[in-house]
Image (cartoon, rainbow, N blue to C red; front, side, top):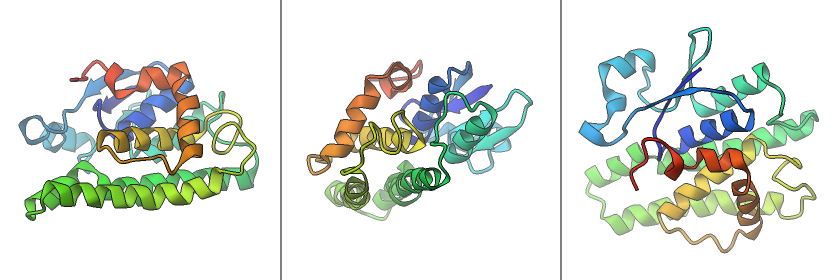
Length: 213
């Protein structure tokens, strides 16, 4: 498999974690999201992924899959052990819901292209930062209330699931923008537990071959 990635991409971070949790070998190719106006806009990459975003995964059969949730679901269906989803259907639905709260409701509003657009519209940096923090707090507040009384080690199981993967990547992003997260002790505890695992450590942005720190 080949993963088109970028070290600071939140969505690519998710897929890297999933691949490492499942112990799947993959080739990584960097698509720089900033240099030269963004390599994701180039013709060659657009031919592979018309949306012009990362990540994109090329399977062993040569099929390209974009969108991190779709990629993780594909990996789960094709390589079910170890699992990234609980076995119970209700727990599966709740896991997907929590993951989507991050992937669909928080991250898109704070993605690079959105923040760049706001600046092009004349927003000052403090306004952009306030926008970013608003959506983090709205999403994390809801997630905290949903997991604070759970008996599982992680968000939805005693092993990390796609919901935990999405959370960890978004917390990394929030820390980049200095968003205070002290109101979410359960989420921070889960994040800390995840980051102790080798798969999460391997996938961390600073540990990528294309990282610039």
